[in-house]
Length: 309
Image (cartoon, rainbow, N blue to C red; front, side, top):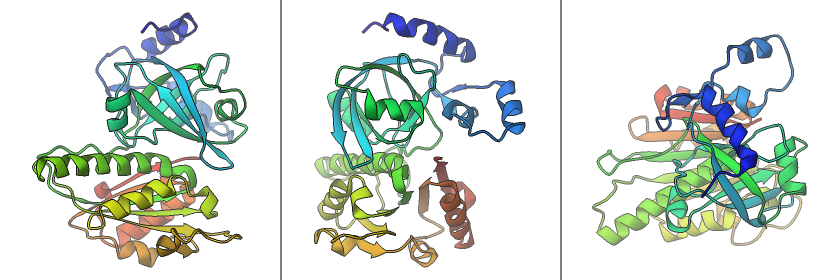
């Protein structure tokens, strides 16, 4: 696949910022970014917020091959990726759109396994006026050409020799995206273990606590419940809704609670010796729940988080 001419200048420009070609070894650094942020109260863009995160050097062309209305406010894109494109469950992409100056930052909501099997990644994008998200909801179509670059230090990528951990996933709103990628990756590993008689990966338990305004905004809920029912001894979840005004689907009732994720509920899921926690959601939620986990005895290096504004 050849990089379209529209992306040639972009690829050259970013290669100047990332001269080393090693995967996951590049950081986007611009001293001026920090200075501008400190002197201004404007909202930072994705590239500025993630300036100190690792990202790949390569910018890969891609094409939108499917669009699904995941909810009233969220569209899920299926994107045919370049053959050399790779990512780890939980990571995001810098998302480049022809004719749009701003660069988007969207977490993968699919597993690395789907990329290996079908050459596809998926992104779930909530509507906003921010140019990349607005383009997804108003102008994006099947066949649209884009370009992507992987980044992020927030991921779950166990090796077969790693000791088992109990994974705790805590999501608020569209913060579910990278955590859903991690959940799907663990189900792929479970399937590998099932076919090999448990010889491939030493998998502990996985629990998801997920909060949204209502059940309509609980993304991927059907697949999440399906994973819990397929692996009842390994997977569990609790959905929290804060503004539910309609009847609830009976299939969700066993998993549903009214109100926010509670500190007590989180503490009950923490084993300081075994738990590895991934959190993603609005900054106030992440800050509060991170403190709860620390107070519960979970070591700081076992609490990984991604904040989305």
